[in-house]
Amino acid sequence: MRDEPADAGPDHGPDSGLRGRDLIGLGGLLAGSVIVFTGLGLLLDDAADSTPAFTLVGVAVGILAGAVGFWVRVRSALQGPARRG
Image (tube, rainbow, N blue to C red):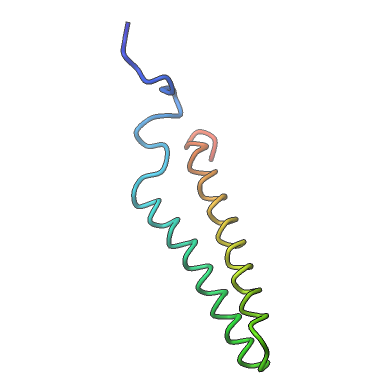
């Protein structure tokens, strides 16, 4: 009898999953999208001489865009190389 982890299988090799650089990229994606869309909202608020309405919309859109990008990248990483191609 061999000692193997319960989740060991064809999709759980050393090349599957998320590594450190992938996680750093995901953090950059989340932070970058929120920063970019917040900045755009600030610029729109300044141009329209309005209250922080566009800034709040920019924050919300940035969070949504970051979450969608995060989900897409994590889903493709967890599916493994056999299912991606």
